[in-house]
Length: 219
Ligand SMILES: N[C@@H](CCC(=O)N[C@@H](CSO)C(=O)NCC(=O)O)C(=O)O
Image 1 (tube, helix red, strand yellow):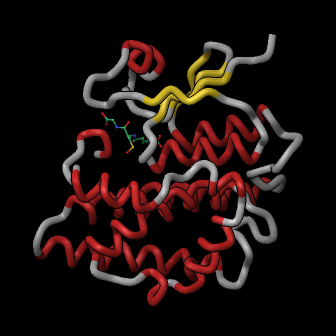
Image 2: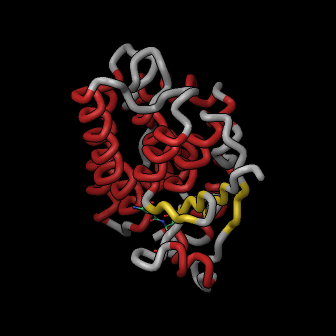
């Protein structure tokens, strides 16, 4: 029987989008099981008892949790197509370093900006742009963070692009003006089937986010 690959996710979760992009890059067929994060299913609680969060990849009945851990797992289980992490150990360490930076500064920073009120908003907007400008320097004139090929760091970051409209509204800034190279990278990524088929329509994210600013599901 063919192997069974199930993804427990929510459509607007940037963390879950990472896994969808990685699976499509690998050409791996999977079944999405959207989760309710307010009234969590017994499956989610059983598959991720520690964090009780999505995404969770269930491969032949065994759960893998934490989006970047899942992306590495996918890269190792299906190595023959679209390698995501470099071969060289030092290059791998640098890719993991930037994946961690994206988690701690970009994804967390985006959530803090979205949740901020009043003066706090300005501070969070400044912090977010400062950190995005660091990545502007990292991408430089490369096509992707992986150099010529779309790789692990690209997968880690690309979900935030579906949240740009929300962040520009909350932060009252233009990403194009502040980070033109990140914007060029964004357009390049969106041309890829793995990205266009895995990320939701930004308008859908926009109305969802502004409507449910304090949404438990996206804390
Ligand atoms: N470090 C983890 C974060 C996942 C997460 O926050 N998932 C959220 C939805 S997306 O914002 C989640 O499942 N929240 C439910 C909860 O916190 O109860 C990862 O990389 O997979």
